[in-house]
Image (cartoon, rainbow, N blue to C red; front, side, top):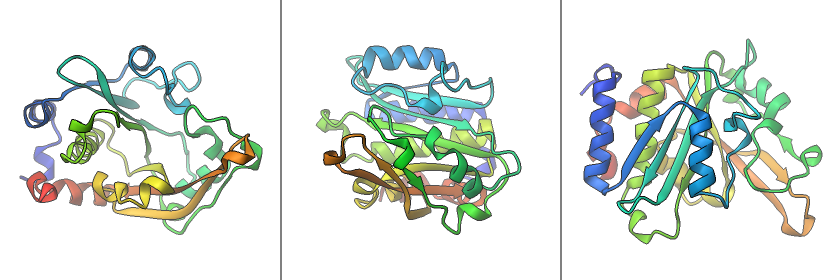
Length: 236
């Protein structure tokens, strides 16, 4: 199936239903971030909504973002992720993040933002156009039945489908802690580019250490190529 055939709402709905059938996992898609905040407050109180997706901090206009949540058959929230268009103007991704990376901190961590830093690698310095930030990716670790099944990759793939269909970005990017990226999570999600040493978050509690992270990204042609690979081939 060609990529242009998946860029429509009926196919997205079919993919949503397929996720539920294959994994016994109910996925909800929305674009009202006030509703998203309410879902998080009720089902993921231990980890607040990240600043880029908090409507009280960074409002998202209609058609400029979306969120996904997943519930187990017993109605428990077990997954979140979200994307939004960033206002980078004519700046490259690297230029924009050098000036604005502090607007994209990890949620629920006390940080010393003044001593945190961002390093722009060669790829982000060459990326311009309409750029989407991908964050909030969470899958409940206490639910063993959700892990080792390919669900996380399938959920990320679905989000990339929605992004191309509804937001049509030139690039999608996100941050990923070293501890996660070095275990292959960027590859499992489908990211084709991962630049190490991109971000360092200094905690307020110095004894707790710093959070080092990769910048992961895919250009539009990467997204198109990735989604042209049959899902069953990725699972294999």
